[in-house]
Amino acid sequence: MITGAGEDARPECDIEIRKLDAAILSLGGRSPSVVMGTAAIVEEIAAILAESAGDLDEADRQLPFRVSDRGDTWRVRGSRNADRAIEGPGPFHLEMRKRDGAIVDMSFEAVLHMSPEVRNLLRGKI
Image 1 (cartoon, rainbow, N blue to C red):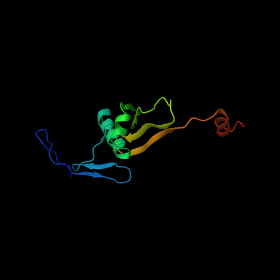
Image 2: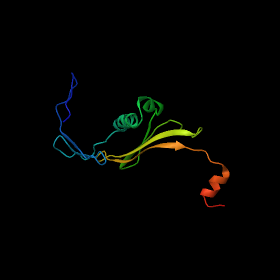
Image 3: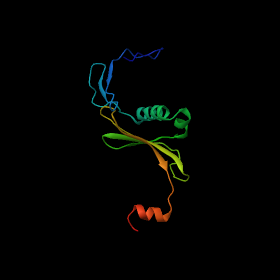
Image 4: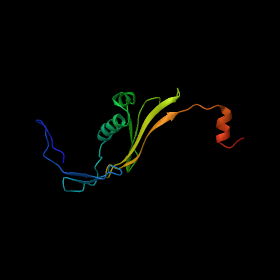
């Protein structure tokens, strides 16, 4: 159960969330048609998940997040090393369904520069 606090508090609301993918099954006894209706909500959740998976500094390094509308889902991409200029940790990636908030995909990209020989070998050109 989630309970608001302070002057702006909303009334109590029971929220049923599936553990497997964080899908919201019911919201206050009703099943909403779209749970994740705005990019701003999804961006806030992405920041929480990036912080949870890494740490507070990691969430800050990913700013700003870029949120794109993909029809039935939202795609969020962090900004850390997004240009892949240096080897090491890269951008945070999140894809979330609008209908129920289920997390379809979440990862941190890593950047590894390869020599032309290795790149050709992986592409099957050698």
